[in-house]
Image (cartoon, rainbow, N blue to C red):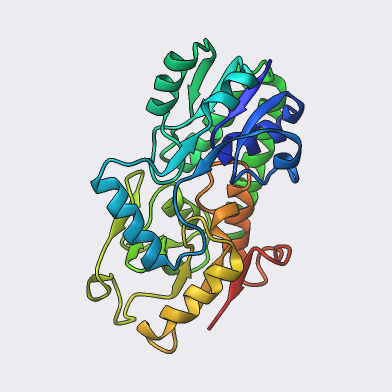
Amino acid sequence: MRIASLLPAGTEIAGRLGLADRLVGVTFECDEPAGIRDRVPVVVDTALPPGGSPAEIDAVVRSRAARALPMYELDRAALAAADPELILTQDLCAVCALPGSTIDQAQESIGTRARVLSLDPHRLTEVLDVIGAVGTAAGAEAAASTLVGELRSRLDAVAAAVRGRPAPEVLVLEWTDPPFLPGHWVPDLVTAVGGVPVGAVPGGRSVAVGWEDLPSRSGEGLDVVLVASCGFGLDDAAAQARAVADRFPAGTPVWAVDSASYVVRAGPRLVDGVEAIASALHPGVVPDPPPGRIARVR
């Protein structure tokens, strides 16, 4: 089966299910399996300028949204040439990946008849369900069942390790300028490690707030700040965390995490993210993660 994955999570899932050799189209952001963009045609690129600060990116996104302009560009000719039988896409967030409605329009214009599978999990448990759905659609049910079982076992191991320990109040920032409180499955990552996600919107959309409106900004009832800027790796997240650390009381620990790989991408590595966050909130209770996933900046 020829598969076009139009979102990084879909590409990651396909790779973990042993389907990387079936991929015939990916996006400019796809980096897992490693080197996939060097082997498979890129059929989705960004319409946003590179290298912007969080404030600059936010301004461009808001401007394009107000004018009904897309955040991503689909190479329809490349997609037609790839001739996929299965297209993995999403309708959860037009800012995060190419929306499924664009795929429908493209299929009409280029005449493809591929099955379109929209991956739209809202909670952590639904991410595991999505892995199963990809396995079913691609004829890899056994591999999907094995992978989901392994991921559930790892989540259970973290839950067992932190059971009975104090539940830290954690403020997660999905963006720093302006600050965004986390939604969808991100609060579940904190809950999975025995924490309490302060001001979060489990299963819903992330919410922009003013700095003065952040919950527990005084420090009372707030144990940890976790900067998990959407789409950014650890180095950028750490720089953004340092830039906002002084907005919180001096005694409040501030951590940064590679959100692009381990927090906002709805794939198997969310469990890596859970384990990394667990190591930060409960040091010595769970094994330290490999370098490059999470770092304390204050």
